[in-house]
Image (cartoon, rainbow, N blue to C red; front, side):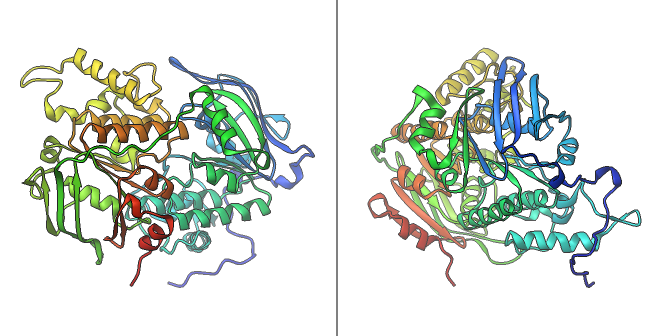
Length: 530
């Protein structure tokens, strides 16, 4: 069925109570568009924000940075109407506003792209873009118009997919772009982006930056949160630093530097990581001819051969869709290979279940912590010990879980990973995104594995916590564990790995020792070739 083109004609209407005011008439002379005065947000046992005065500058990219738990996401949730302040005021164009819901915030022109995907996997891409923001004609949703508008938004993001595609058929990076398309579909004058590039490839990040430039040109103010410091320096106009729930400092990006950012973020807690190779032991893992077909044709994995030794840290680099996640899940038994052999400590395991591989010494930290790493309804303690139940560390047959031993082990792991938590019995959703990621790391390590697979382990983690993870990876190798991690950050791969495997189109295109690694070689090997 042919779809009508989008023209300059009046689009189908939204319900009257959802129309957005023309913001050009409301602009003031002040450069500050949003301001908070003395804003605090208290949770049971936690002060997320403490008397914060924060300013957002009009028609600029306002970078907000701080360690995990610094209060960044909490502040954004209040500006977007998801949370309300315990005390203090929020001002928009100099006037006090009450943001009691996301609908109220959107009516005032404030939209948010959340750090964790806020989408519906059982719905189409088009329905996700317009849900709660539909276009109506004669009392009915105008599907044809929405289809054309969704296609235009996706084309703007250079995402070549049909708007009628079910969302759950897309990779997580493409789902992130759908989230961005949804924000762009609204009448937005302040757009909050909380870690928008955490799941995007380098090419997709460039597209996003171009879109941000277009939005600025159209008079949209951006609030941008990221832990990638070079990215912030490239895209930002103004930078604000939070630490431990408090405002620390602000300045123009042109007057800032990465050392100043790090010092402001971590204070006296600044840490550094120095590469120190561990003694290599015997081979612990081998994969030969590992092959897996996509359901729609083509290869997810194409004749993959690799080995891994005790004490070795192997980085896996590749673009989105290269096969890194499929490789890890196939080695763990979460995906079934069509051909190939997997040997763990001299024993064939390709026919074993995930549980048996877990018991024999494999562990995975998945890329998508919300969908695959955590059980949202459980406590921090229950999440951390969930995988360890297979090993009977905390229970014996027909006997209840030994709560004292369980709590002691959890507390040790929390201290080891520097997780900011006041009570292990709180819901895991009470933690910041970065601290949730550390819980997933702790869950894997508490199984006492021989081989650890880390799929984008520093995604959504601040610079201080990244260093903690780097040290943890080094410590695991020093203890004789075999570690394989994937990363989209070239510098991270080059800094951590003893050896780097590069993947493209499901194949291993390079297997390089540390001495043979350079940026140009990695980028060239990661580019798919016919």
